[in-house]
Image (cartoon, rainbow, N blue to C red; front, top):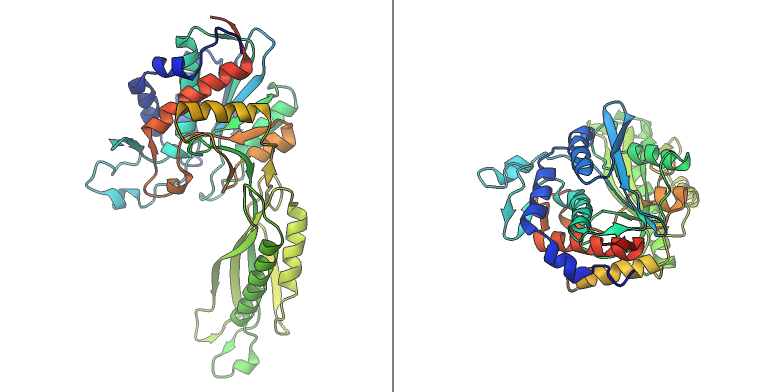
Length: 419
């Protein structure tokens, strides 16, 4: 960083709260439930063009575009990437929950008690808007950068809508970087909500659907059937025992312990021996665990359950992301200079922020860390605990502080050519 480079205090003086909040409210108003990303991409493309980021867009699936752009520097500094997903989860139940109140419209983005409410406010339009607002702050400060600042906004991250949620957007973006069509960044911030903490590590996961088949029979002669629901309880017990074993053997300082959680069980429904039952579960993986190994160990536990003769078990994995079975865990060294720098400016922008923590969720960083070879962290305003709920909202002070911190981080990492 050069001597005349602006810092947190100068950017704090330059930030226009009303202008910054208006950008977020406008972003929330663009409904972009998974599958309808184009609505928000149109908005982002216009804003990126206004900021001189030379946006480009392309469909990763028909009618579903990504958008990306950059501002090149004079040379000699890092190339930074800010990346996030454009889609949100659904709004089913929102209107009913808030009917008759100012929160009733999930895309109206009302300001209530210092918070902006609405679907996508935290996950993750506050992060996207904070990153774009940081560019506006650089311009207000009259900064010309040595390094490049790049932005990429991709679709299909969220799950929940039929036929979607397989990271199709970032898969397309990753291939463009690997082909050389888009420049490879030196460091990336994926703007998932962290309450302005820095997450250099995340859990991995796989979801397993288990189908247990037996033989149905009239309830009066149960000896003629093979009870699939009874077998499901035996399999569940084996899964819980497996979960206890993997949880006890290791712990990650930022991510915690692994486990397998049975999330659904169903079967029967007639006055008869249940001939079919189904289980669903999610397995949490720690950084350093391999999905192939975790799946093999899990299948050994399930197939080793002491079920009755005549029972057959089938397992499928419906949530492939960067891996056919699910999403890989990932981490980068928390002592990287970029991470320490980011944590420092976050703490200066808002007291109590900038902690180093682990992500209690899975998102798309493995595509950056592992496939592109770019170290990346999660960092943005917003609280993951209210995202995906009917109370999604973001604190305005935290959001504005995020824009200030991102601007200071960009200056520190890219370097200032002149002002």
